[in-house]
Image 1 (cartoon, rainbow, N blue to C red):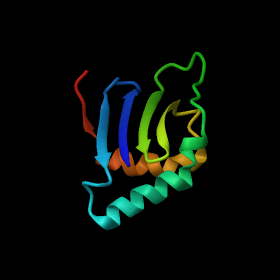
Image 2: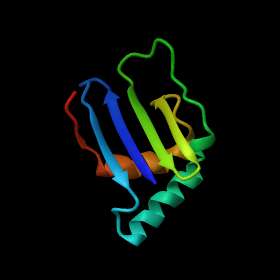
Image 3: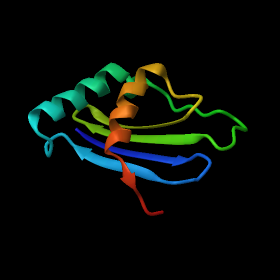
Image 4: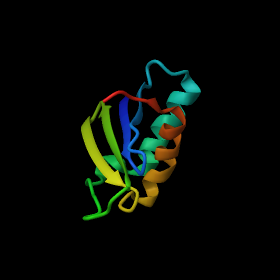
Length: 99
């Protein structure tokens, strides 16, 4: 499974992100990431955004799994509760990205 994560916006407008591949992670981390993806139900979720909401952070997820490729995006107010543990995991691994 491959995951591309980007976080942008917010007051400072910084872009952070990470690219993870479970084939490159140790078995414990790969299992943890796959579990978080499954528990988040992100592959059954539709993108959502809050109209006219300024200075919110936005989150973009691209997940490439054996069952298909899924791309969704959310902002701080539209992020589903089930996705929050996955978001936290990815934020802890995110680094500044160039535009």
